[in-house]
Image 1 (cartoon, rainbow, N blue to C red):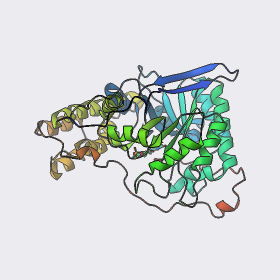
Image 2 (image 1 turned 90 degrees about the horizontal axis):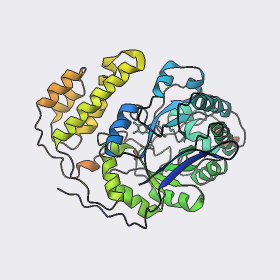
Image 3 (image 1 turned 120 degrees about the vertical axis):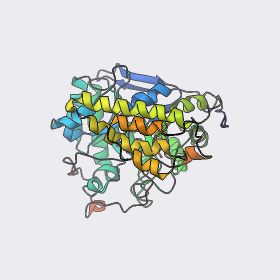
Length: 405
Ligand SMILES: Cc1cc2nc3c(=O)[nH]c(=O)nc-3n(C[C@H](O)[C@H](O)[C@H](O)COP(=O)(O)O)c2cc1C
């Protein structure tokens, strides 16, 4: 079975995506140039080194962003946060997302990352809709305060320039439809030195539903000239990515949930942007082989990270099982048993009981994975909208775990 995909017109995506930092003295810093212009979205609890390695094995040479880490936790020396800054030895462009709402903390965090030569690229997250940060004025609430946003980006870029590290920014359309900020946010990020911006084309209120509004990506591309504008939201298949570029004129795509349980999507993306026919969806047997590779590498990752915790890797793997099996008619009992595995042997034994020739159901690749809920009520601090010009730093520094953007 060969899926038909709209061949990418060469005119649509002729330019590679280039991210390059600048040293304080103006000389060129670290950078990368990738074609097709495809970026793995940062996803907390997912895009760690094992997952990125798996994705890179299907789609070498693209940009794969690490999980988000909290700037304050890094500065305070939190060992768990520190261990999350982990890259494979062959990962040439070490890309990491940083969260923080205090310009000085961001500067200190970047100093640690730069001084210790831990990363080659820093992405900033201004789209987190989690109540625990927005109700303190952090996350997706920050862009409402343009001066604060400006300070955060400027401080981060200033610190990153000491090491020639490029900084990019990722954000949502705004808090609600009445509080849209993305056009100004994009321009501010560019003016303060971000080398690219990415829009998750939903408001924080939308959370993950209803659908991403790609027309906002087109509007942002029109509004912010001079740096690449990347589109994000609801790219489930490679043809969606080509379509997003065609419809919005964006300079590249950011892939989130579409690759959960489907790391071969990056191979498909390279094929689709190159105008080649896509390979058929894998049979269940091939999926199981990838699952085992993933489970093994997660286990080794957590052992190597000094915690010697074999169980942690497998526990983390459980959620991936549901995603890998999405669209394969294995039945609820098999899904339940995969969701409860606690050793690698169990994963192997369970996999051995399945029919390796099972095919993906029609339309299976479009079945949603990961977060799908929304809309949500976004919490802001009392009176937040009355003082949008002030530079008060949101009190969210002690939040150590977050997911979403
Ligand atoms: C499990 C999960 C964790 C996420 N964590 C982050 C995060 O840490 N930082 C961020 O900017 N976005 C995060 N996101 C949002 C994604 O990066 C992306 O913007 C969003 O899923 C929309 O893209 P998609 O429709 O391709 O999934 C997360 C999404 C999921 C599903």
